[in-house]
Structures are given as C-alpha cells and as structure tokens.
Length: 379
Ligand code: CAA
Image 1: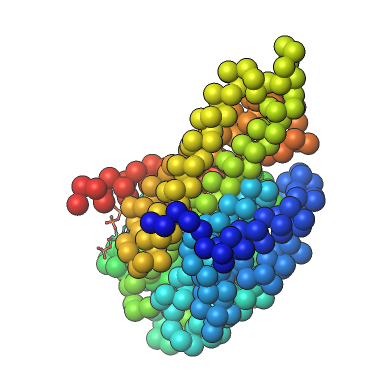
Image 2: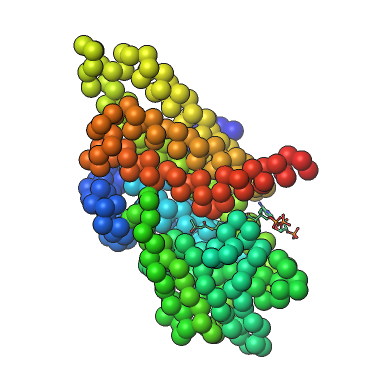
C-alpha cells in the first residue's frame, strides 16, 4: 500500500474540504435542528462529481479511485455527516451496484443520471422485520410473466423521500430462501409506490429517512438486476463496498470532532494554563489522534483492495467496525473536553456525537461486521 497520496488525490481532498467549509458549514446546525435535507448542497456535490465518484465517465461518473472516495467522504463528513450519508448511499450502494451488475440498457437509463447527480438513488433492503437478518425478506415480487408484482414495506431508507430511483430487494420464491431473492430498479411515481413516514432521528437529521410502501407495483422484467435469484448476493456484494463509505463517514465524524476539540484545548484556559497542558486532556487528544490515524489506514486498505479487484468483505467490515467505534469514542471525548460548551449546539461536537451512533448500526451493525470478519478469518 502506497502511503503517499497522488497529486490528483490531494486535489480532490482539497476540493471536498473547500466545499465542506464554504457550502456545508453555513446552516449545518439549522439543518440538523429542522431536519432539513441539504437540497442545494447535494445538487452542487453532483456537479462536482461527488455523487458518482468511481463510475466510468461514459456513464456520467468521475472515474476516480476508491482512495479518493475515502478522502472526499472524510472531508464532507467532517462538517456535515448528513450530506456524507447521501453521498455514500448514492456512490456505494446505488451507483457501484448498477455499474458492476446492471445491464447496458439499465446503465444508460438509470446509472448515467444517478452518477452525474441529476437525480439521487436509494437502496431498499431493510424491513420492519428484516434488518440484520436480511435473508428474511417479507417484501414479495411475484413473477407475472413480463413483469413482477411488488408488495411490502421497507424501513429506514436513506434518501427515501428525495430519491428518483430505488433499488428494491424482494422475495420471489420463498422455497429457495436467499436464492429466491431478486433486486429491482423501481421508479418514484409508479402506481402503487408510496413514500411513507419520515423518521425523526437522533442524528444525521439532515438526511431524509423514510419507509417505503409497495402495493401491487408492476415492475417490468427488464428492471430486475442480474439473473433470477441473484438479488441477495447482489445486496451482499454492494454492502461490502458500502461499508467503506460508512467507515469513511465515521472517520470524518471522528476527525471533525477531534479537530474542534484540539482547537478548543489550545485556547481554553483553566487553572492558569491552556487545558491542553493538563495531562488529562492531552492524553485524551493523543488517544483520539492515534485511533483516527488507525481508522484512516483501515479505510485506505479496504479502498486499495477494492481498486485492485480483491474480495473486500473482510477489510470493508474491519474498516467499518473500527471507524464507527472510533467515531463514537472520539465524539464523546470531544464533548467532554469542551465541558459545558460541548453540550450546546453552537459548538458542533454534540451533533457529531449524535451523528456517530448510526455508523455502528446502518449498513450492518457492529455485531454483523464481527460475523463477517469472524467467518472470513475462520475460512
Ligand atoms: N459478501 C459477499 N457475499 C456474502 C457476504 C459478504 N459479506 N455475506 C454473505 N454472503 C453470501 C453468502 O456467500 C451466501 O451466498 P451463496 O449461498 O451464494 O454462497 C449468501 O450471502 C447467504 O449467506 P449466509 O448463509 O452466510 O447468510 P446468513 O443469513 O447466515 O448471514 C449476513 C448473512 C452476513 C448476516 C447478512 O444477512 C448481512 O450482511 N446482514 C446485514 C444486512 C445489512 O447490512 N443491512 C444494512 C441495510 S442497508 C443500509 O443500512 C443502507 C442505508 O440506508 C444507509
């Protein structure tokens, strides 16, 4: 693994950093308070190529590598974790899955507008009774010849209220268990498809998370992704890459909180000196810096392996497991270092602490990551 970033990677990092400071920072507290989706900012992210970063330019993408993606994700999440999850889902779960597994017609029709940021996408796997146990899909897709009839409910869907295209996982043949599951591209506005309730969340409140309701939705056969029964393997493959995105989001949350805590510790005085001169505070910052660096290395390792075409189930899971723990630990300590100021919204760190928690839950809980890692090392 090359630890030196290329000129191009450094440029992308700087562009994402500037964008986050200039366009995301203003209003981030208000968007969190009001649960307001960053509409204009996401539009600009699309124009910058941040929503289809790794997709081939012939399908509207930016054609960058996965390390660049980690760098940009960290910079965006360092300021606004809500904008970062919109970016992660569109890049990793929607665009990457379509580029790798969709037909040429599907790529032209759906991937191109998604990767160029003209529209955004959502990935609908979770259900009221199927979260971690993802093979227990209750949503059905009955094979009716030239179309499938889709019925069921999906829960906690990121970009649920703003997406135009949705990748929906459903059970076609329960007898075949996970081999009877399919993945479909579903368009917003199709008869019988309704966007349900918006969740009132602890964190990432600027992202919109909805349930989706499918009531006899006719999905044309050409909208199935891959061969009949490929849907579960598709979802697993996509989630392996998605975990790099969420690991990088967690990394950004951690480094955003750390930088604020470091700055505060260098200026705030107590007992006649800046608080960084007190070992109790300095050691907290030392731990934070070390853990963030280790998390970044795990993200880079998974990204390099992805670019090399290797199996990233283990490295992606390790990156997510560790980075999300670091995000939680670091943000709690950042609030602690800020004392009373840390507990009020103006200082940002309480938002980072709330935002961090979800990184241990979505795209596979920490417990699921341990299943994936332990199965991989036991092989
Ligand atoms: N990579 C590739 N394939 C995998 C895989 C992985 N990491 N994990 C499992 N599979 C494959 C297996 O090889 C198997 O395929 P074959 O039969 O073809 O060999 C198939 O999937 C079934 O595997 P298992 O028998 O191991 O299934 P299981 O039920 O015991 O466990 C699981 C599977 C790993 C626990 C899986 O259910 C899982 O990952 N659950 C978590 C789901 C998840 O991450 N949900 C997040 C929702 S999306 C989200 O949060 C998005 C958002 O909006 C932010």
